[in-house]
Length: 397
Image (cartoon, rainbow, N blue to C red; front, side, top):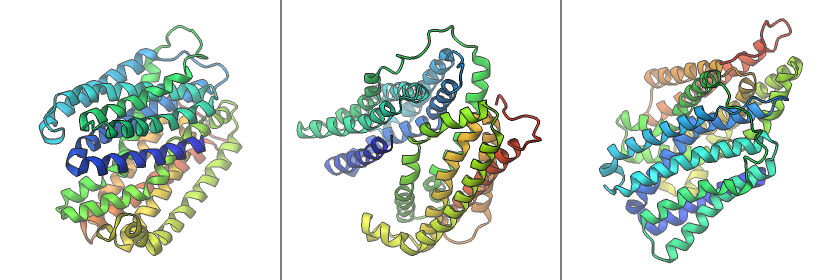
């Protein structure tokens, strides 16, 4: 899984580098829009489906899959994303109606991709999970390289995004799924809804920064510096999204067995790791962050030492928080998870409102504060729930 995830991350970067340079910033713009739409829907809506599938299959006697619910969510996501593309067609997608079909296929493809990977990880087929993650990016890169040599333009290259999402089915993820009656969807729907709410809040903290910097009337150059700095420092978090599937099953088994001491120990360890990561990330980001961005992206993107420190520290906390929240998911406590990230988002917004300095520094400090608050709440919730005298160890939402 680790090797496959790292190769996938490198291939995704090479795809953007290769296609971006060949097409140029103007012709590459529709690809970036499609990529952004896919990323947001995947991380906010489809990753929760993947992780709930993993959790369901990690218990000794798994329930039947709520397929009606998942199919309904995918269809709703396809409709919503396609509607957004339609409204933004002239402004963001060159006014080409074909992009509406590409968006619909892209979102449907990644809905299936997330469910398929959830089935693979849930059945402990971690090798196939890693291979499918790697193949998605490598196939997309390979097809793009071939199409570029044939002189294919932006629309043709956009279809490579769709093709990457389909390769996971080579590993027949449904092979070990028990043929049982469709489960009642109401309970699963509550869990998915609260999980989506949690991810929406957390992804707003992580990804909305450039939009907020722009809304604060920063210059275009300042927005670009903020975007590129945070994009670079978010690399560990991006890789972590494909690794959490490996740690959710053991946490689920600990919860199923009622092993509170082990859960409590893990919460304390992760809390200490997050605190250490925040401090180390801040110092490292302040000392070498600006020079690193300068070296990789050019002097025009060099951030201030404070902005680099906020980015590195906040991403360190966010990465540990991503692993920590798997315990709450294992507990079926996605409602608590939604509360933690909503409070974190509120803290981030309040920080931006009262902080001084440039727009990018205000938003950078808000990002760090929001991550710290949400992470602290997640750890506290796990510790409280795993006390020996706690009345309930799990919840349904």
